[in-house]
Amino acid sequence: MLQQLTIQNFAVVSKLTLDWRAGMTTITGETGAGKSIALDALSLCMGCRAEAGMVRSGAAKTDISASFDLRQMPEASLWLQQQDLAGEEADECIIRRTITKDGRSRGYINGYPVPAHQLKSLGSMLINIHGQHAHLDLLKNERQQDLLDRFAGNDSLLAQVASAYRHWQQSQKAFEQATAQQQATHDRLQLLRYQVSELDEFNPNDGEFEQLELEFKLLANAVELMASCHTSQQILSESEQDNVLSMLHQVQQQLIRASEADANLQPTLALLAEARIQLEEAASELEHYAATLESDPQRTQEVEQRLEQWLSLSRKHQIQPEQLASCHQQLTTELAQLDNPEQQLEQLQQTMQQAEQEYLAVAHQLSAARIEAGQQLSKAIVAEVQQMNMPHTLIEFAISPAKPSAQGADTIQLLVSTNPGQAPGELAKVASGGELSRIGLAIQVVTHTTQSTPTLVFDEVDVGISGPTASVVGRMLRSLGSKSQVICVTHLPQVAANGHQQLFVDKLIEQSSTETRVTLLDKKSRIRELARLLGGEQITERTLANAQELLLEA
Image 1 (cartoon, one colour):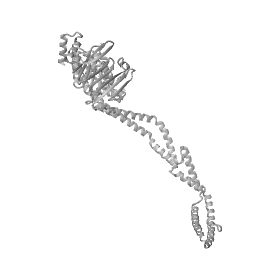
Image 2 (cartoon, one colour; image 1 turned 90 degrees about the vertical axis):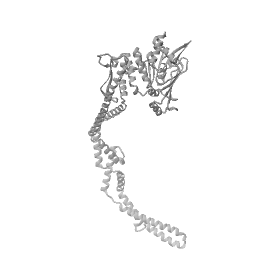
Image 3 (tube, helix red, strand yellow; image 1 turned 90 degrees about the horizontal axis):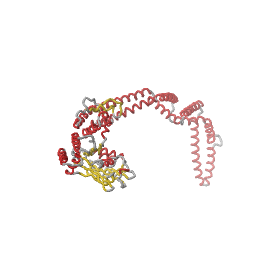
Image 4 (spheres, one colour; image 1 turned 180 degrees about the vertical axis):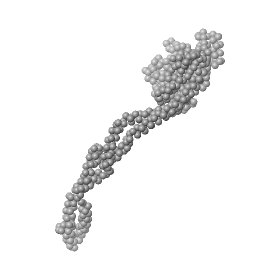
């Protein structure tokens, strides 16, 4: 609920503080006095466009603040928490807007600077402002659809329809892309089948290339290696004379005799003994290695051919030979995924068709809910409109099939007949401005329980209404005020009298300055203001009596 509005240096207001109450507050005043000044200031707090011309002449900036009680506004409280904009007092919210004389504006929520779009987001949860031409919004089909869905409480169904529609569109896109890519897939399949068949026949294994390289190196050098081993064996031990081991033995024998004369040769003898052991082990190892060597021209040719195939296939696939086995596996996997494209296309088509059926099913539920709600809402609107001097009014929501969308598969039109024997037609073609205004007001009365905004603002929505109809409108607005906070700018005494409280706006002109004032009227002042609205500037005993009667009837 709106609690307080503070305005500084805005248009013709230098400083103004308004405290708002629950119920219905009416605002009246002379023509040109600025009855809508408070509503214009509120609109700025709700994120409306700011202009330099709004700043009071001679002032540096406009400063407007609006405070709200959030105790009955869980949606707004949750939004503030989610945006990290909650104030120190959880049940209170203060919105502020400043405008400099050069047109720059800033918005604040609970002291935090915010862009205008966040003011609009929060403002839509706090206040619903209906200007003099707000009823024209009813002429739009999307507004009529939104009105019906809100009344029906279709939020859950709308979410299901939107989700099903997205799934349907995504599956349809996947099917269309797969169809377009079918030829490219066919060409790729032909290549893959050839490549995999070739590699299957070759059958490369991990680590095989490295092993073949090593084996080929040994086979290619087998003769040379065998010759080297034979020569080395001869030198070490197998030569009949002058082999290393026999010569080492002779050295040992010489030093053994010499060590008998000088014991200092014993360490040298020990080293020679150790060397002999090492040489004997080396000779044994060499003999064992030589036994493993053999010259096999046939095997050498086989290994060489296998290596050439590895290198040829690797060049064909533009990879290193060591990567050929993994390449084979990757191509085999891709072939398995792409093989049988007709079956995959059929699966995508089935998925698309199933998604379409799921969408149509939930869209049908939404259509049924709209038809039922349309009947209920039209009856309720007619009941209210007929009280406003439109006794022959007929209203219906025409719901017809339309191209499927995320909002359903319906076209919704609000059709109206205001004269006997006249078939219901489009609202824009049938209803006059005054009739449209009354229908819009009736809709507000009927649908107020489906609106989450606790404060309703009406800016001269009663234009074109007078007499008994004005009294009915006043009572309707007062009834709204018993459930929501209602603020109504009006020029009709019958409407003004129905307010739980009344504000009077006048303009004070002093020398070269103009000031707009807003005053909360007491009972006596209120009777005089109602009398002025009834009879003009000449207030008589009769108009005063009529004004008092209006207050008593409210």
